[in-house]
Length: 134
Image 1: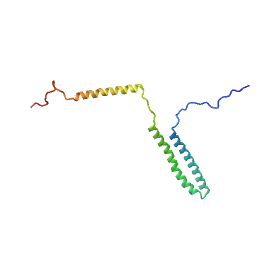
Image 2: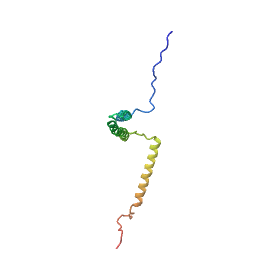
Image 3: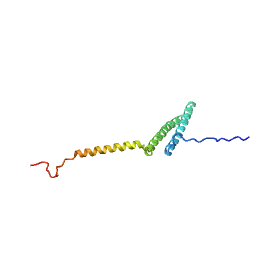
Image 4: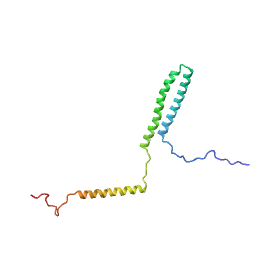
């Protein structure tokens, strides 16, 4: 009797594309900082409850760590915004959008040409007539 072996996992296509390297680096840094801040806050709370001398320094460092954690999260957000601005999605217009844009451009060009033709000073037959006769 042989048992057919099934694979441990089946690879599926990702629903969302992978984050860019700078964004992922900032996110990992932020997660580590936030985790350390939460542990520090918990130790500060337990030291306070126990009445330890370490409570005050831990509370003070927890406040500093909270500022650092806020900076880390904002760093992820700013890095993501900068990445999207610099390397954002390059949209390829569809043929319909391209055709409409071409038609709009053509109609504007015709309107400008008509406007220029109407703004010209009309010339006489020979072009030698004066504008004012004295």
